[in-house]
Length: 183
Image 1 (cartoon, one colour):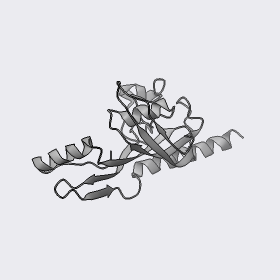
Image 2 (cartoon, one colour; image 1 turned 135 degrees about the horizontal axis):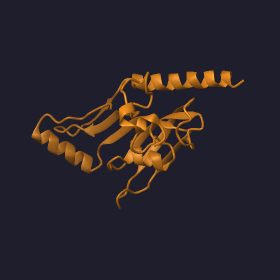
Image 3 (cartoon, one colour; image 1 turned 60 degrees about the horizontal axis):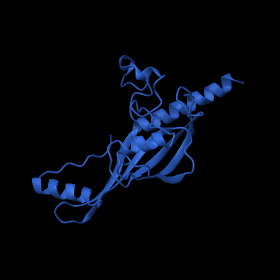
Image 4 (cartoon, one colour; image 1 turned 90 degrees about the horizontal axis):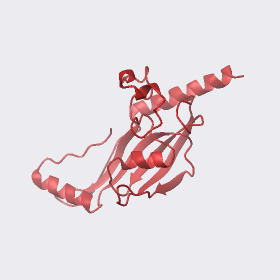
């Protein structure tokens, strides 16, 4: 989800494709991942399909989570920014899995094989019924050259996606309740 770039003319499409190919476009994604990502800043350079793949990351904040159905969550979730340097298919999702912190709601690359969401019949888009129902990965900022003038332009979402805040606060509250029950 998040920002989407659409060319309005054939010339703009050609120029945008060229800008992406020449790595003149810079993107930032916001993700919610399982577990506590440490260190707070870093990168993953694991290749994909014999090609170079490079992602930088920065932790935005940590939150507690009551969800222990996923491997390596340890009662934590992390909100983070991801900066793809290369653009391989599913690069961010694969890199987060490789780091041991899959993106929340990622059925393909996450740790959901023992979780009800792995059953297609159990999936629902209502986060009140299934908090794992959405892939928590959003394109929140992109800088690219204007397709006609070449001037750099930056587009960004205001604030965070509302659903991200809902998942984080729901998980934090559930973790607190669980701590009280365990006393």
